[in-house]
Amino acid sequence: MKELYEAILNRLKTEVTELKEIDFEMGQLEVLNLNIKPIVLFPCALIDISYPKCEDEDEETQQVTARVNVKLAFECPLPTDSKASESRRSAALGLFITVDKVYSVLQGYGTAEFSAFSRKSQTPDNRYSGIKIINMVLETTFEDMTAHQQ
Picture (cartoon, helix red, strand yellow):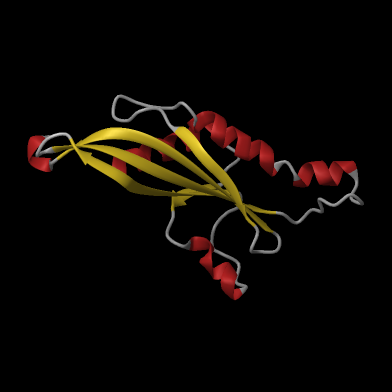
């Protein structure tokens, strides 16, 4: 899991310079439920990894499907409504350029250790006023061997 996280972190750090913080997801944004500003730099990407499917190839090797959730969070102080000036609305909606860039640099990216990422979903989380969150879910596969076989 560590190698997968490091590969994603380094890819985003190098290719999506608009992101001011990239971190492992540890509930950093949950303080928004208490109306407390989180201690993250916006825009940020919070990465979480799960293994929803693991199949034995033999006693010491598994084929793993890994699901990567990239939570992109943006502070949105500018208006996006129809009465806002074109320039202010365009600036506010600029976050979608960053979202598209994250998709672009991760979709199809793979290494010798894991197969190319494939985006499976992208959904908004609109619970917090002034904060836009986009959850991007990607999948990859890799072979995982027990420690004594590596």
